[in-house]
Image 1 (cartoon, rainbow, N blue to C red):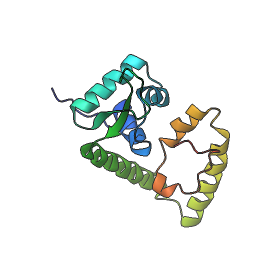
Image 2 (cartoon, rainbow, N blue to C red; image 1 turned 135 degrees about the vertical axis):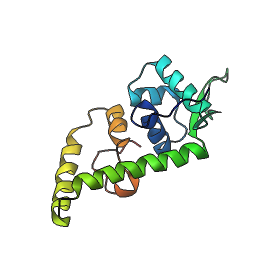
Image 3 (cartoon, rainbow, N blue to C red; image 1 turned 90 degrees about the horizontal axis):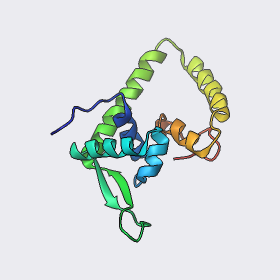
Image 4 (spheres, one colour; image 1 turned 120 degrees about the horizontal axis):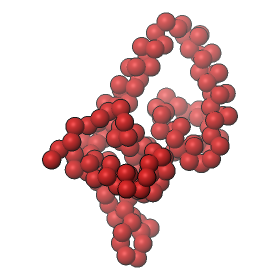
Length: 146
């Protein structure tokens, strides 16, 4: 049975994260999304059933072969681009009343704020999943996570 894709919840977050960091393990994805292990496995099952994510044998997997690396399928990659485009459209709408100079000042201020947010490596991953990598070439987060 195909599931209706919820573009605003964990499904969208997982698609975005796996686009930034192909090959993540279930455990790392679980930590980034702050879900339980069973919840993460169910999420991956749904995304895989919908043809958005695939499990591949992890290169550094366990001897018993259970370790998997998560990757977007071509369909998942297309959906990720749509999600990112929608995110940029929403930001553009929110910022439409600002001049170019005001946007620049806002960007500088937010960069300063971002340097104070991550307390752990996992917190960096959580913040980076909200970023548009193409436009974030001067990442203010120390030790950029993804």
